[in-house]
Image (cartoon, rainbow, N blue to C red; front, side, top):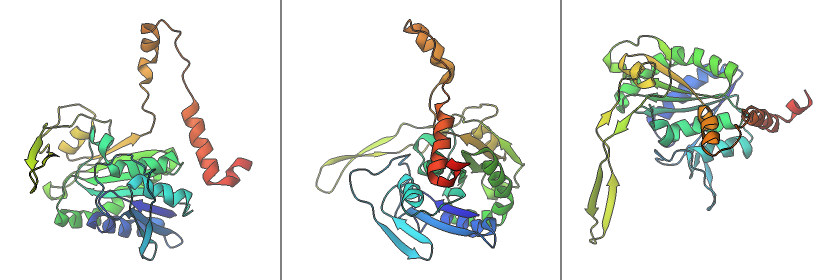
Amino acid sequence: MRILITNDDGIHAPGIEILARVAANLAGDDGAVFVVAPDTERSGVSHAITLFRPLRLREVRANWWACDGTPTDCVYLAINQMKLQPDLVLSGVNPGPNLGHDVLYSGTVAGALEGAHWGVPALAVSHCSSREHDLALLEPLLLDILKPLVTAAQTLGGALNVNLPPVTEGPYVGTVVTSIGHRYYSNEVHARNDPRGRLYYWIGGAEVTMPDVPGSDCNAIRDRQVSVTPLGDDLTRHARLGDLAGALGLAAPPRATGASLAVTDRVRRRHPTAAAE
């Protein structure tokens, strides 16, 4: 198996080193592991892609490249320019959770979604602690946790958002499939002056609230379960299509099937021989 790894914390982050070592075991003796990751911190960039300046790749060691762009740029270049032909994309390990509405902002999740967008099964992996010591303790557990999730991703396609409870707070209580919950940050904006007296703003949000939503990723983490949420890039509120049409006095639209066809088309572009099958 050929595995592509990225993250949003930068190519020198400890989490990506851990994931690369685990991926080497997942890939097997006949496989290969490639790392294409941002050259510096890119947390919170969501699914941004760079269109109005050039991108540069720099090989930092064998099969490891630093890119001066976003996680999306990294995966896009790896698949469409570098032709690495991955069978799996892994994004992480992120130091800190990506729960609830975090998925809208997370560069870690975006890296996995970009892989899925091009027909490559993908996992975004986050650990609910930001301490390097805790990440080191997590490493011996990761292989057994990820093996069945990789198999599921390869069977089902798409992206899985994986969140792991803090490893220092006791043993995990299994793995559970979840939906996206609700995770709210305090609305903190710090207004300050720089040394030249010019005003600037720093968005905070240190206080976090997670309402009780049964079956959600947030609840799973509170229950010390590994949370796995299937994600896609279709943001359509399908249940509201008919309501919207009614409000506008229009006929209800047919249920679209273009999303699945688009994925098939992307798979064929990635593997041209598939078009002949």
